[in-house]
Image 1 (tube, rainbow, N blue to C red):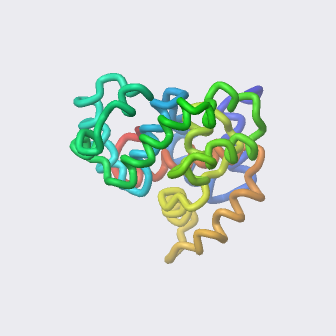
Image 2: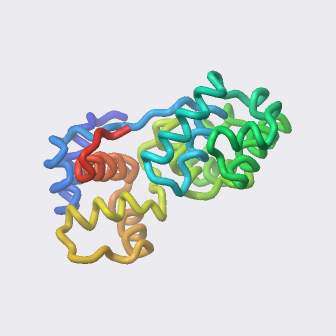
Image 3: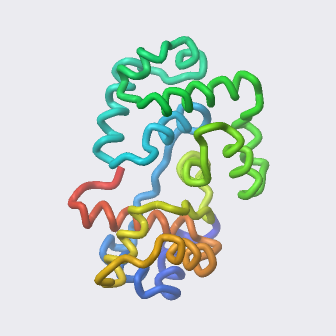
Length: 208
């Protein structure tokens, strides 16, 4: 990134009063989430799908206790009962095993992702069962550090935006996503980091 984080925050704040309010609340210091690239990173993001942050943290702690080093080979070798004991639902057991098998089959090739444009990278990830647009976007944001990806249907982002805007009720998710996708490029990912950090502040916890 040629601009500094502060410069990008300033540019976004100039475009949106809501982002300006959120950025001021966090002292223009968004927490940039980083995850390991490759299978271990995708495993974690699948665990985090459609659950609250505290629930995800509890499940991840159980996974780390039982699987100190998450790898394709280790997950493939584990039974469904073993993975269920980590706190994974049956669908998520299928997803993490399916993603591991896709790596073995070379239909999922993490090493090729950095060479792909954003849309192609999302499509490559979404070819794996259990990996939808939100999961793919989160992987590219957290594991590859891309800064112009917008994770559609993220309820925390919507809640943070509504709070920063002072809305009595939240706008429709699709309207919010359309606005963010069209008005905040080429720093849509940074806008997401601002709003996630602000959301954590609203919830009285540190961003993780």
